Length: 74
Image 1 (tube, rainbow, N blue to C red):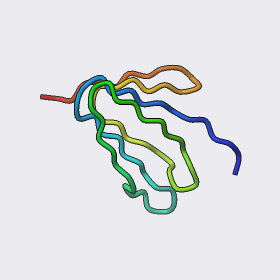
Image 2 (image 1 turned 90 degrees about the vertical axis):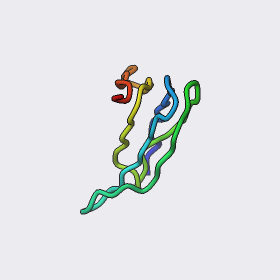
Image 3 (image 1 turned 30 degrees about the vertical axis):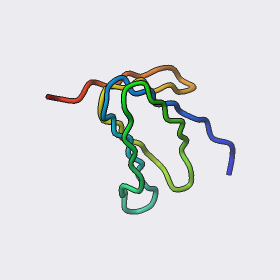
């Protein structure tokens, strides 16, 4: 497998959820993390992870730039 780029998820509020989704014929949740404000998670896509869902206010740093997610609805 070729070297994959990393992404960095920087939580800007407490309770940011990072959810990994599987590859294959059925997409399923396979991993979940909860980050609090100021915490950073470094992740990458693998043969098992085809997508990530990020819920809460965070900055996602990629090789293509920075994406900001919206804060959690109250």
